[in-house]
Length: 269
Image 1 (tube, rainbow, N blue to C red):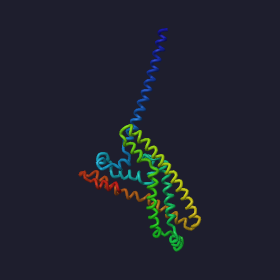
Image 2: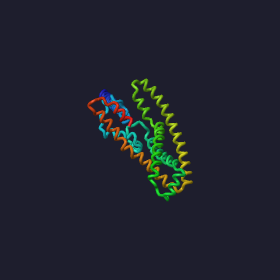
Image 3: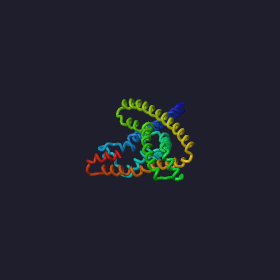
């Protein structure tokens, strides 16, 4: 009996020890995973790194000119911003994708608004041929107006600024308070975004339907204008963002650490 009971006790102890080992392993794994997530959260993403003040950028920003240039494209280029899934920003991916198609609709409607009697008469004189020289001013104006509308819509739809504010909190109390405030802010922003975008899309659909129904012979011109202006908005960032990239990295790598004004100029660009 004693031998049997000893065997039973030893087997029970082994099971308990095995259970404890498994539990400790799981806890350690969870702790490691949480620690790795915590470390990832502390790392500056593209937006945070690009927004650093001059003194902090001298310490933390060790990127090359090409790395900074690519980060600008990831943040600001519409197509890359919308569809680059590995981006480390704090925005909702489905909203980013929606913005791409929404902004194309904006370009389409803004171009349609510029079609007046003079434009239609010019199309008649050109015998339906697409006159790029005549249309270029209309394309540029529509692009500028679209940029302004896009900025407003992005302000309502993107959540990155609020999440970064939360990361900057230093105490648990502040984090809890900030979390509640940010949660309310984001709910209001997203509600306004969906309501406004829905109303815009309804208005866009109505106007474009009426326009294409009345001006049947100008549909091709409208599509060409819209594609060109939208294409320009996708192409010009590749050239424009070269300037702030060169200025910023030059100032940060300068031996004389007195280039604060040039650094601010690069941020403005």
